[in-house]
Image (cartoon, rainbow, N blue to C red; front, side):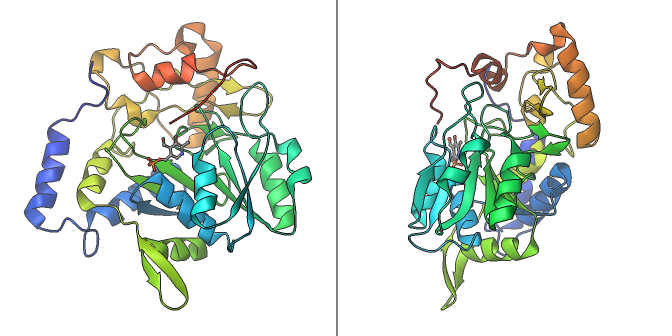
Length: 318
Ligand SMILES: Cc1ncc(COP(=O)(O)O)c(C=O)c1O
């Protein structure tokens, strides 16, 4: 089976954009519409489309107010959070991970805090969320921005909220190997309009002399195909891979976006509704052993189930 399947809806979307003659998001309609639909699907206050997740991490670090030489606490298992800090000439400071989940260990944060600490980048790996209550509480106490890297956790839930909406800013990747694959692309979600404003400036060269930016815009074609995958439009959900962690309320990503791209025969029963109802349906799914095992042939399903971290697993993600 091909990982991603495109159909007439995607072709129609591309045709629509090509016929409009506007492929750049400046004056485009697809990117703003994609942002609105994504924002609604995630229950996020604000969203900003971006050229890829690395650009999103870079912009989020800038939005944190970090300056050259400041410190950003990052996850040590994958390189991307470190790169996000280094892109802004900040120093990545490594926080150890929990031995059972390989997610950031919030109990280690106090020993890493210095006067230069400005932000924390939490990598939500394999569809699981870190202990966000503890991380957010620490960040609030010390005035730090919490950035979630959700490249591997789109639609993971934590206490009824979606990964990427739990901290101050969330970053999602639509790179070809991710659950929602658009070749390349990304989305950011944020709580504050001010942060969105800063990040938007960063995607379009910034403002001189206030803040130099980059060209990090998403293309209209990417947004148009992305809109076809939006769960607001998708008719199916795959929740079988969701596994609640009873002590924390964390659950694996339901990967709703993945469902549309898999062969219809491979799909599992559907689930829909707001995050809280999806979270409870995930809980009931977890109580059923037949539904706990992913039954689709989708690579993302096997990745999230097979890659269950153990103390001995050396994990690296791309
Ligand atoms: C955890 C994580 N964050 C960020 C990225 C970067 O994503 P993008 O290719 O969209 O820049 C990746 C890419 O694999 C990733 O695995």
